[in-house]
Length: 107
Image 1 (cartoon, rainbow, N blue to C red):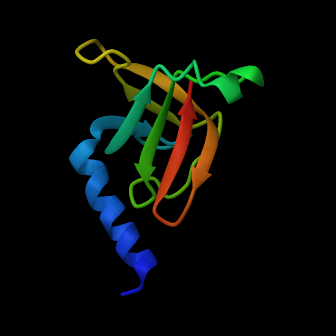
Image 2: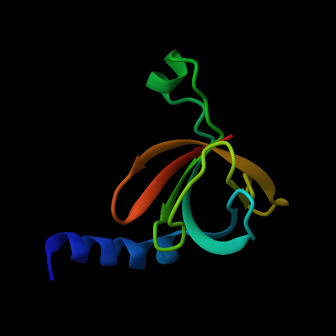
Image 3: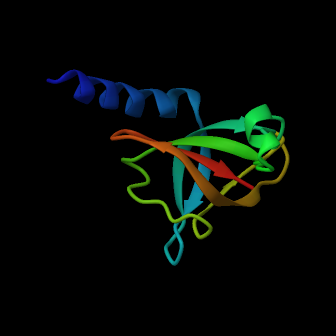
């Protein structure tokens, strides 16, 4: 097995272990429950803030669970403050992607 295959497999194993259950709804599609690692309250990132870009959160999801992403169309539902009701957030930027995962900004 190639190193890249091992890393993809490892990341796909880690996200459910350290992530939390969210609902991902593709534009025009049906909602699915997946695991995501969520970095909340991300509005203070200096470089992006200087460019006038702010996000409510950044999420990391497996490409196995989310094969494609539509900016300003897909949405994800989770609680911004743990223990409170969940809110819908629009995927408004793809920060990075590779063979194993997406790093997505929501607001």
